[in-house]
Each structure stands twice: as C-alpha cells, then as structure tokens.
Length: 396
Image (cartoon, rainbow, N blue to C red; front, side, top):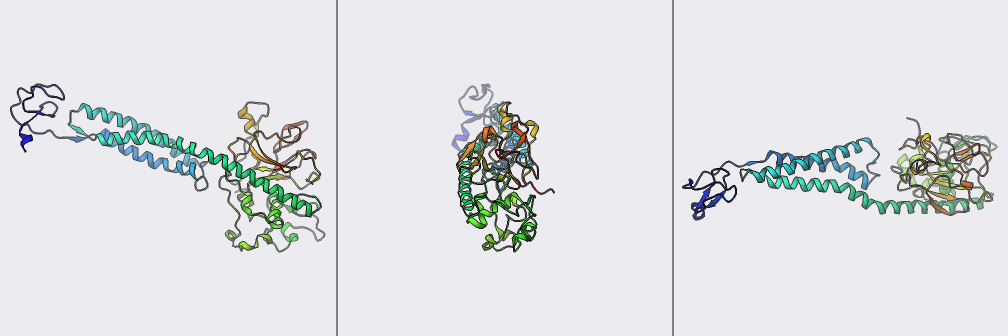
C-alpha cells in the first residue's frame, strides 16, 4: 500500500511513475499537472494476439494428418488428396498466424500498457515458426528410413532369388510357373482356396489349359519353398500388407494348401515377375543378365496407384522424363532388380536389362530402351527381352 501512494499514473499512457517524476518514463508526457494518484485505465487483451493464437492452434490440428502420413504411411497414405489439402491450408493459416502475432506484439508495445496479450502473440509466433519447420524436420528424419526400407526390399528380392534356385533344382530347372502346360495370364486365378491345382487354375485333366496369375507363380515359393508372405512386401510400397489367410477366414496354418495371396493378391505382393506364360519363360540356362523380378511395374494399375502416363517417359530425355519409367514405390529414384544370376542391385533406370533392355516394357521393333507398355496377356518379344509384370488391380 505504501508503494501505491507514491506512484503517479501518466494521463496519456497510464504507466506508473515515481511520485517525484516530472515526465513519464514510458511516453515522455509531462507529469507536472498530475497531483495525485490517477485511476488506472482499462486494460484490454489484444484482438490481434488472440486471433493469432487461435490460428496457431488450428495450424497444429491441420498439420497432424500430414505428419502422420509422413511418419506412418501405412496408417495414412500421403497420396490421399485430403491430406495434401489440409497441408496446404495449414501453411496458409500458419502465415496468417505469424503476421497477426507480429502485428499484435507491435500493437501491445505501442499501447503503453493499455493493451495486454503479449504471451498470446509471442506464443503464436513461436508455434508458427515451429509448425513451418516441423514438416521439413519430419522429411529429414524419414530419409534414413527410406534408405533402410530400400535395403530391406533388396534383401527380400535376394531371398526370393535363392528360393527360386531351390525351386528350379526340384522342378526341371524351370523357375516358378503356376497353372498348366499352356495356361494364359489372367488377373486372378479361378479358385485360390481350391483343394487341387485343376480347380485352382481351371486346367484340363491332362494338365493343359487353364489360367494363372503372376502372383500365383510367385506364391509357389510360399507353397513349396517355405518363403514367408512378408518377404513379398516392400515397406515403401504404401498400403501393401503381409498376406494373412485369417483375414479371409482361412486358418493361417494352411498357407501351403492355398494357391495365391488371397482374393486380391496385388494388395499383398509388391513385386513384378518375368512373364512366365508363353514361349519365353525363364530357365536356369537363360541369359544371366535377364531381369527376373523387381518392384511393381509403373505402367500397370495397382490397388493403390494409377499407372503412369507412358507418354511422359523418354529414355533419351531429361532426368525427369527418364525417372518416370522407374518404380513408384521408391519415389521414382529407381527399383531393386533381381537378375537371373541371383544378384540384386538398385537400378536408377528401368532400361537395365540385356543390351539396355527396358525391364518393364516389351520390345517395340528395334526400340528396346523404351518399348511398349504391357497389358494383360503381353509377352516378351524375344528370349532376351525381360518383361517384368504384376497383376493389374481389380476394376472397381
């Protein structure tokens, strides 16, 4: 109470000053006419500060989906349109919050104590700066994981290559081949839970005819070589999950009794395979430089991604045009490729087969670097033509 008696309030800005002060310490106004304690002016919280803080909180909410998509893409795919929209809106609100926060601080400082809310304004500015840096930090933190996932994918393919050699040793030096002697490539097999191969692939009694999928040939490694279904999932192939029969009301212990990765195999298999149905199927004596398997073919629809526009691909064009022909799973940086000699490498371009053959297309006359995009039933043009394909997504 004693201090309060010896204070003067500036009539202009309301700041308290010593009783013997001649001029206001805040605004310089003359205090000679002030003879006693003055009534404290009303202090209001800055509207700008409050608005900036509310906007800052909205930024954090709007950024949440993007951060989840960056950190855990299997939970929330970053390719979903609404995720991109919320990310864009969050940065618009972030800029608004930052500007309002700065204006609020300036307003409060100039008010001479008549306007409060400095904590709101400073908090909004700090949150805005933090919110702007957070996505970049998340991307940087995710880069090592991308490299690690790429290595895991390569390890998967290396394991599949070793299993294929074991299979070939047991089955007349031929690489995995589902169906009958002259089965054709079909997007889905007739019955993946059948009791026998004749019903599974709709074959004739003599083992001829029928139809088989690319994934059903790969599934032979699960059925006959004890390869685990998780080995067919690339961790960067968003939304692809390990095949678990229990999800389809089948006992998990019955893996070897089945004929494919469930009713929708592309959801559980990330890899393409050299087209086995036709005269150019692989054997152990084929050209060692032929590609056997790799990440999904970018020219075939997957359940999670539309095929790329082939018109944009030019092997003789700019790096951007060349990268268009690479696997989608690895963000067009390249693809892990298993070759017939069983070595696996991460290839930066898709024309990495024999004589620079494009592993994802069939030859178009003499053009083997670009070739023609595959479709259901496509065949390699020659025994030196690698054509890695996967089953297309089921039309909705």
